[in-house]
Each structure stands twice: as structure tokens, then as C-alpha cells.
Amino acid sequence: MYGLGPIEVTAITGGAVEMVAPLTGSGYSISGCNGGGIVSSEGGGVRLSCDQGTVATINDAMTLKVVKIRDTVALLRIEPAG
Image (cartoon, rainbow, N blue to C red; front, side):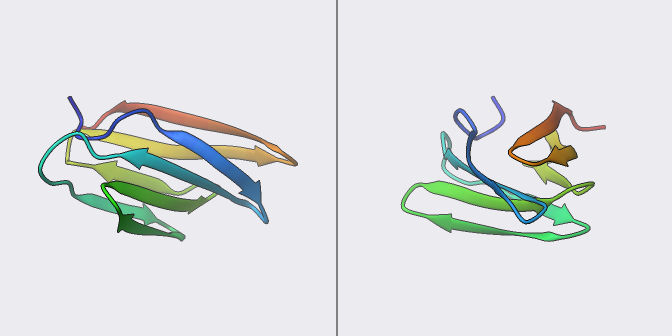
């Protein structure tokens, strides 16, 4: 539906959450992680590293926000864009 498969958190380090997700469609677009972080594509998937407080918009259809990071726990908010 959003062009990505299940999002997997791979690490929570230094105030950032690192995630990977497989692509489920022929293309994708990600705006973000606005406010701090990086996005890259690799081998049919996407890798995100987002700092606390940042928001990524995926395929103009959903947003992913890193609400809070504490030690090895992160609170993420994923919801439809708009």
C-alpha cells in the first residue's frame, strides 16, 4: 500500500534510529528524514537513519516520525500523510 514492506529497526544508537524495509513496488520516494538523518536504497530495499524529532515522508502516502529515543528504546509514529 505504501510501497514498503515491514519496517525493521536494526539499531538505536547515538540519538538515531536505523531502519530497513523492502520495496514492494516499482519505485519509491522518501522525503526525509527532515531535521536530521539519511536515506539510501540498496538491493531492493531502503535504509533510513533518523534522529529524534525527525519526520520522513514515504511515497507522499505515510509519515514516519522518531518521537523519542531513550537508551535502546525508540518511540516511532507511523501514520498516513496529510
